[in-house]
Image (cartoon, rainbow, N blue to C red; front, side, top):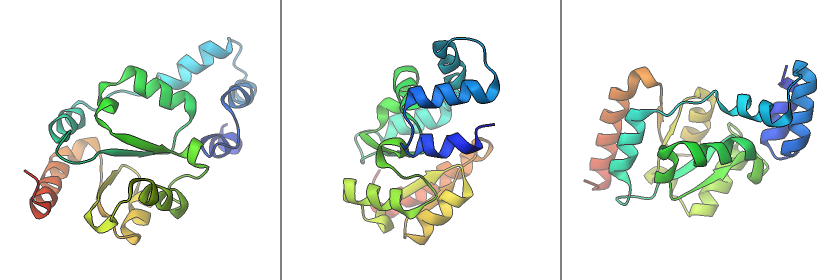
Amino acid sequence: LFDDIKLPYEDGRMDDAEFVRAAMEATGFRGTAAEFETIWCEIFTQNDPMHARLEQLRGKLPLYLLSNTSGIHKDYFLRTFDIFRHFDDGVYSYSAGASKPGETIFQHTIAKFDLEPTKTFYVDDLLPNIETAARLGFQTFHYSFDQHGQFESKLAEWLEVQGIG
C-alpha cells in the first residue's frame, strides 16, 4: 500500500503531513492523523543487547547513525528509545534527500563526518545496504538479532585492530 509514497517520503520529497494524508487514504484509515502517526511509530522495539553494547562504546569512539527514515520516525526514536542517545550524530534519508542502498547517502555521511571507510565499522540489517557499504570500503556486519553473538565477535576483532579497548 505504501510502495508509491514510502521512498519519496523517506527521501524528503514529501513532508510529514502529505505522507500521513496519502497513507491514510491508501489504507482507508478513518482515525485522526495523530492516531495514524502513533500506529505508524509503534512498530518499533529497542534492541537491548545492542543498547548495552553502544553504552559500552560511548566515548571510546564516535558513533553515528545512518538511517532511512522520516521526520516522524526520527522524532519518535529519539524521544522513546534510550539506545539512540548513544549516537553522537546521524544522517537521515529524509533530510539528506537520498536513501540506502544508494551511494549518495553514504558519500554524504563520509563527507559530513570526515570518515575513512576502511576504518569505519558499518552495521546494517539489510543486505543491499551492506553491499553498498562494502563496495565503498567500509568494514561491515550484516546484523540480525539472532546473530548478536557473531556481531560481538566481529566487533571485538575490529576494535582490537583499531587499538580500541
